[in-house]
Amino acid sequence: MHQRKVDSLQRTLALLVTASVLYIPANIYPIMITDQFGTSIESTIIGGVVLLINLGSWPIALVIFVASVMVPLSKFFALYYLAWSVHRQPASGNRQRTLLYTLTELIGKWSMVDVFVVAILVALVHLGGLLVIRPGIAAVSFAGVVIVTMLAAHSFDPRLLWDKEEQNNG
Image 1 (cartoon, one colour):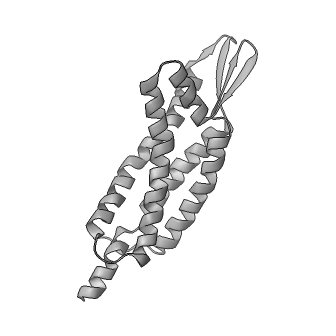
Image 2 (image 1 turned 180 degrees about the vertical axis):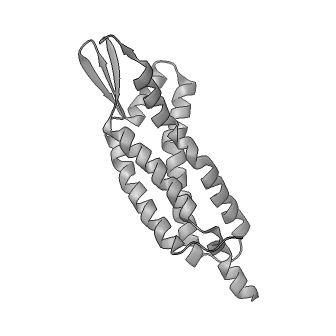
Image 3 (image 1 turned 135 degrees about the vertical axis):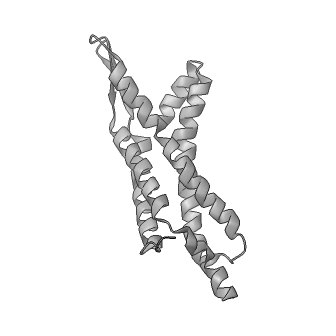
């Protein structure tokens, strides 16, 4: 047993709004800049997925797409829905919403895959000035999105979902 999280709903919503704002530059700006023979090529998350598909690397493109687009968006929708459902939903369905919360917390860490890929490429690929990979501003924004959504999921108190049922039974 542990105490309730103070201002859980307000804190969760504030963190979700922050993550939503960070998600915009994470997808608009380049996540990776490749310097090859003096030419710089900037890649956004979606641009990188399209490039991988064009190169025939469907499995890697799928992993990047799921981890960098689908997982964060799913977390946003799930956490916004859970926060909304605290006040708007009837007590029925609490088990499903609790399961949704558990899954949201579980999968949240996997969206860091894209940031790790860029970090590994930056560390490994530096071929004597012929090919250099640098992280773009979107890498920082995307890392912020992942960290802030993890904090939002952690700050949400799932017991709020059960309060209406306790009031009705009590």
